[in-house]
Length: 548
Image (cartoon, rainbow, N blue to C red; front, side, top):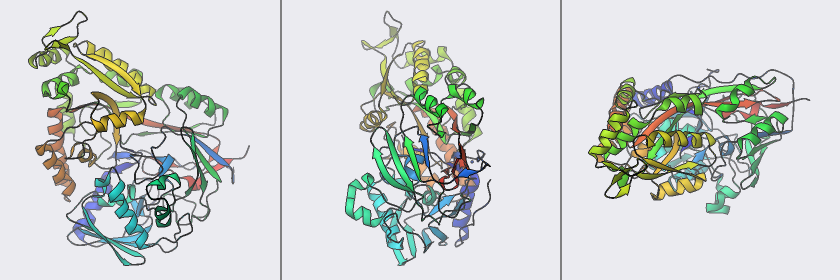
């Protein structure tokens, strides 16, 4: 699962395109507040709380997932629990607008292939070593070697140190999402720590961000100190001086009831990704703040398209027609989601009403049509339990569901019931997320419930481009050509047209079943200065614990 809790907006894409087309320009300065995920309609940023907060103390957060590693360049899951040790060349304000970070300015060549970044001169790594262009060069080159998502940075040809505070990146061709990648993924790492630890950098990482690694207890927590020298905060924070807190602890509690209990007791101040069934109760609690925002992607029912069961498009289409999203949204999600039929939700640039309506029309629930397609694919007889049989084998498939997602487990039961109506037997296997991910990469799975999230429609290339389809295992020359064209196209209208064509292709091919885009809910208490958005995550520099 690739997930980033931030949101890409239309104007961000427009900014990228404008910069490429106009040649050289300076990075825009921070703007006042203005949405995570990817979207044309920004999710609201949380306003700063007022109140008299005290300095120091430890902030405790109930995190949704334990990151696979604290090495941001090797992780396939990035969120608040591992990303705030790192700064990138660019950042985002709470509206999603790209702003300067480690780079105080940048320029781009007329052909759109050479990006030059001028670095701040007052930045130090957690080890005390100064940031310079050589460190940025090493970080980019290391990312391209070790990251499972290295294609996010695009077709980088070379990285050059122009002078100690200037670095240039040369692309082999235009790449529309490059500036977004420089803001969202290019966490700069400490060369001294990389030299010391090599592949074990994640055991004791060092970078330039507001959080400094202190301790990790596998399966339980990760603790950070606040970087008291952090005076180069980008424009998404009001506090430009040292952070107020002393420590931040992310706790990885698997049981939602336990999270809720500890939040009520006040032993946890921030409860991330609140399950839908707790939201109403939390909204009624005095002193509790609630932030809701559309997610950056969608939850989906995925197929291993290399498996014999799913190589016939009629079977995949039949399964899509058997799914009814209404009970999923109303009951499993308590209404905190929007049904999605096409490959992109409204929160991601590249979303198309035309594609969504096409998918909705093709895959509105129709069990009669579903059974007809299955019969055409050779599933013509049934056993005593009503399960379809072909060549003497029943249509039975294992559905992998992450053990840390109780809501997805509930949804799996709903899908199991719906698919049984058309003669398909689903066997639910609740498994550890890492095991699920390992099996999907190896292609030893049949079906899975997962989600995706990214700040750019280039997510489709990462899921279906040649050599990238590590979950769904669906790659075709025609689709790859469409997705490559889209990631190279710097004309915004033509780029969106390419994604529309790719969307239509995916709807017809049905390599997965998009289900819904959820509202991400965060609850917080006993703190002042809480600000967060889907574009920035939590802004730790401004948070103070309330005096009790």
